[in-house]
Image (cartoon, rainbow, N blue to C red; front, side):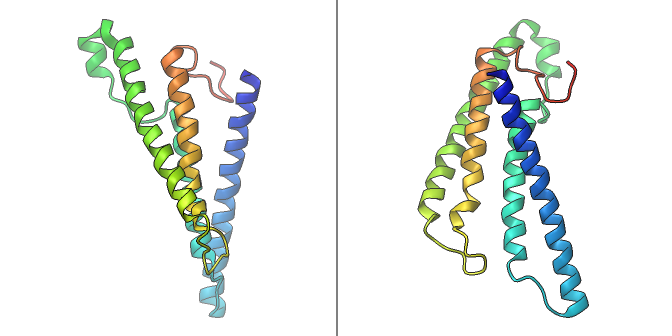
Length: 162
């Protein structure tokens, strides 16, 4: 099971890198065409925005998994050292509630907008909301895993020898 999870996160990293490279190439080509040849790629802005949303949502899930989100733990560790495990579980419970709301809302928006087609790209506008649902599901799985096993999954990342 751990190997499948590692493969999933490696694929997510590869998707994010590919999307980022495609966004850079698309925007650069559009700038060159616009200022050099007085033309441009009509759908480049929309495709770049769509790629950006996917990268941000997947990046949020990756950062949550790796424990790279901003956290202020000095106060609780200094004044309530015995309560830290309880407070951590409470935080993961709050995160779980928040990402379930993200999952629920993004899934509803995806379904509501799936049949609306963008005139520039011809893609469903529901694709703008789909990464919120996917990232919400990934982050919910992370939060559940951290609620059950807070120590084991804390620094379990690809490429680190911890």
